[in-house]
Length: 578
Image (cartoon, rainbow, N blue to C red):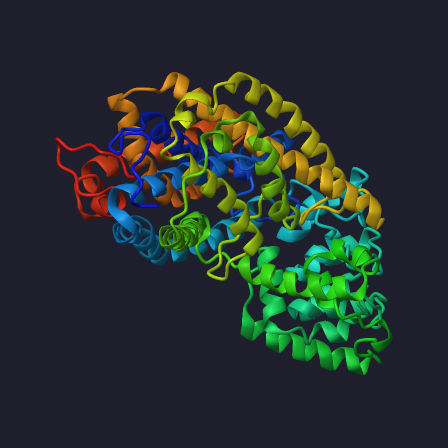
């Protein structure tokens, strides 16, 4: 394969694809810039702005549904180009310097920083957001705000979007005064959360002694059972992995010594009150999974035994793959896997003397007939959100890798094809126009199917499967329509060299790698400002990008850091990273 001459000039400068890839990177900064304004049911982001709006949820899905697909397609194209120019060994050496080394270096430098910012943001949110809602008031322990909400007629036992009542939040966070105010306001002590747990379960789980005693003194059932048969006493025996995962999802800080001591005291107290351990009759092999994904419980019972076994294997892999070790740099880790896969395929192709694919295979509009089904299969196994999952752990999530491999592989097949430049993306206005109904239909069935953050409209397995199949189909169609639309759009408006565009493309790698800490800090800083959300988002993105550009120009571009990211440069050498 490497001995075959390329059909296009090997040294051709792909200005449109340089701009294309930079666009994907910069769009990621914009996406993270409005994450604090997205009303997530769970506090998955360190900053929670006072001006959140559902429109940002729509924007999140719209951008996530195609952005990295663009990036991986272009990465596959440039990987094939590098292979033709440098051979297999040269490709591996180059990608190790530009991808693997930055991944390791910046993960070590940035991950502790991002974790620290997350802890700081969560603590600050607890202090600032005490009166936004009844649940927020319960979290922060703001008794005056709780009383104001109750006086206005707030339902004291209503669960929030995460399925937790205000009393459960007070119990989880040890807000005993808030719990007392909620009980005085008529809170139902036996009200259950989405997994059947009560506030007493929550207090026992986190080792909050004062709240547990308060609940029992007011008549809470010490033998209440959750959906998986768990009792408040058994909640004190939760293992470390489950505790850390659930606390992390809810962004609850864990003091292990305090929690262990509290759990021991609560267990002794509950036993004295006649508490029983987990109810064996309610045992379920998937019970541990319901704690993490409560919406899965009504579905699991409808699955045959072999499907439940498959679900357990997939769930364990998924949970391990979701550990956010790489944070926002997970795409580099994914790219390392894809380049390694490309190297294996290229080596086999050279040994077996495979011929290049015919031009019509990538250039014909009928390419969707094989691209959509091929992408549909891995997308079917991803249900975290609309579009592909995001997995930031060193343990890979195979469906996500396979999904992005389709885009990467298609990009690799396009290199060397003259038809790619002439035909792919030619009907870009039509592609972008058709992407709109594909997105709307996909989000419609996404809403019916549900996700990690909210339950489905129907738990009847045939209905759920139908909704999932349609959501998957339209999310895949949307991704490819946007990819082909933007290929044509950038080819139309960025066909030649432009110094400013080249500079942006050159700096985009640095900007994306480093943007998350300043963006998150600015979001935390302005989260309680009463300014319009659009003004704050523009300010957050503009200030963080401008600051990073100054650093790039004077401390990165012509230094060893710039050499690691983009290759060595002088004032007269402005090649972008390849």
